[in-house]
Image (cartoon, rainbow over all chains, first blue to last red):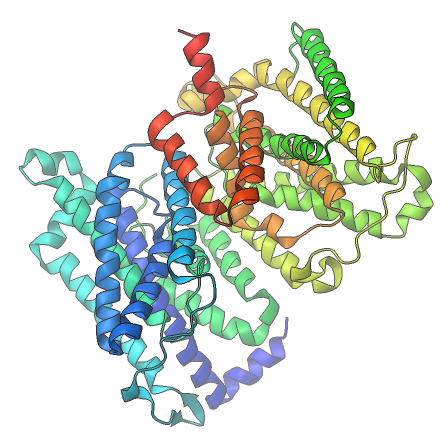
Length: 301
Length: 324
């Protein structure tokens, strides 16, 4: 561990700003994916181990749309919508059977879907790395220099976009009728059903929204890095960390935790490059020991 | 706390010795290295899965970080056999290394267990997962000792002891199965002892035993430590088999393997996980010989078990034929 490197970075504006921007980018992309996971858990009570596979599907779908149409915006929108529809089918055919099942059954069902999807994308798209979609033309401009820190404008666009998605999500959950129904379904689904609300519709809608968010994260990631089978595994674990740290089911908690993890990754890479992942797990362990319900979770136990 | 049940010990020990002899005769009747390899792997992975099933089947705790102890056992054995202490110990380095591997993994299980058993349900699962990934990260970070992502470098010697040379395939086969069977017979005693029934009581209703003055946490911790030690033993056997130790053994996907075996074989019958290991290994061998898409086949098989059979194969057989 190199405390001095970290110290040098913090006192230098260039390093501080570029690392902070990097952390923000990682954190915001993570928030997109993790918010879907925490939403699905909060409302449906299902630990969706296949969330990372949905992220991977988003990357493949947008890569496919990009290679056919060559339009970046279209590839992101169609890619993430496609994953949303896939999520709807997945919920209706498989997930809806295990709402009241044991935790082990939920984990194994989702994990079997991960195994199947990882191989299916290899059958369809081949097992080679697909080169990334690339940055859209609008953003192929020289990077910004803020206090000598080099910041690609595309990263800023991703941060801004994730921010907007977060605000839309917050608006849907707190201000709309659908959001109120979803929150009610999380607290007492039976009562909601007795009141004449179609609970299956709510569940399907929530799972579709969660899948859409995972797909959106994957579609954006496809423009930054190459696309490969199994790419969802590391983001799955990171999303779990975010979900646990923020509080399971809490979207605002997921936002806060994504920022923490993004910064930990970015600055951790300066201080202890070999132990960046370990740092995240250390934070997760500490939160679970000191505050098991998460930073912004409700104490249910 | 009583850990022994004397009634069936002789019967179990007799069956164990019989199975061991049978498998040794089997070795000579079918001199096919592929089959021998599968059998010894089934026992190693079976031990791993059975140790996890103490927590899942008998205690109802979904531990998702069990591979941490498997890797701890493997790395301890490997590092000890690589070190200079081997030459000082002469012929007894392998048994010593295995004992040390079990001790280190039980120490690790004690440490992790004390912290984890305070949590319930999904929080317990996540904390075990986090600890396991922390250990994975530590293994990757300590490149000088563990070899980082390349695994333990340069292998290690396997000095013979008591006339057993684990470098020879037959000796390894007989030794691995012998150790596994002893452990399984001992585990059977534990599971059928008052202590074992205490675990089932905690699983079914944790408040009732607590109100009877039963120390739930102590029982959970002891079960966790025993499970961790047996996983460490399985890890040390795996390290002896592969003459190495790899960081993937501490990765979370490795913890999913015994879950599959428990699902395939059955969590409510004692030998279920061992049977699951057999199904898992045979499937692995058969599928990888025929197609590259192992995950696809395994995923579909698991899906059939989860949604179709809804229980492990041995559970299903026992319910169908014996417990009507």
